[in-house]
Image 1 (spheres, rainbow, N blue to C red):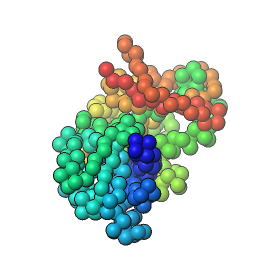
Image 2 (image 1 turned 180 degrees about the vertical axis):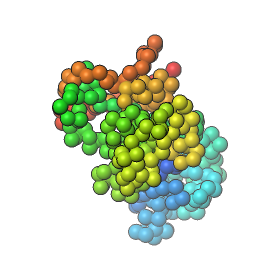
Image 3 (image 1 turned 180 degrees about the horizontal axis):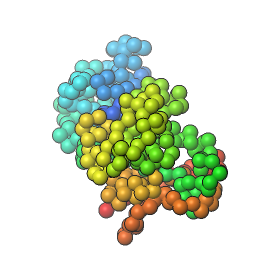
Image 4 (image 1 turned 135 degrees about the vertical axis):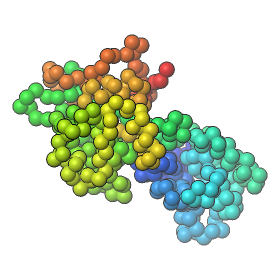
Length: 345
């Protein structure tokens, strides 16, 4: 049974990945209904206020096979089923009403007020519960949601692109791009994972970035991310820059550079944001790293030696160093990407 549980949980995780970047302030969750060793239906949570993954999967079974097919089935879900009324009814109630025989879930609800409640409610209804199947893999999907629950802060990803000598600008006359088209396409996929992109006033003045989702396949069904400009000199921002003139200009916010943690907390409270991508110059990158506000680093390394004055990280440094864990390396054309979480003391 253990191997079968892992197999079907991987299938549920496939469904959950469809919701990344779409569901905030809720987490991405996937579910699969299995009957007699065969997939009967699957679903994923599509957004706050819409049915949760378990109900989507059960609705797929009812549409295809009728409601009776749910009785005696096993439901695999990547997150502990919810047990309280919110904008939607509890999934535990739906599972009990459907007459399922077994529920297998991966990650426990990170909200301590809810954690473990599904075990009791489902158990009292005679439903067998198995938990913790592929828990680490499923927990990775909900890191932004879990961090908001624990700390009231979003999950923050720093994206840097640099030359072999750690510079972020090319010599004069060589063009603006360090990395190739394949790496830039991966940046679009990164932007699709988050609800906000944070940059500096200096980056806006020097580079005039767009910081939007331009890939039609990624933009479909997603709201354009908020663009958040941190600056100590708002009066010097170029108001003819794309962030202030394009069709998404109402999604641009200008905030004080002085207290970035306060800005991040307000993005959670006021905008329902759980994941932020940082695209900026070396000074703001260093400041956020030194303040402990970065959770994950995605660095693109281009096969160039630029020799310019702008380093990727331009701070005071880290007396005890900075360690990354579970690094992932991928190649995009001639460029290499490192993606890893930052280890906190």
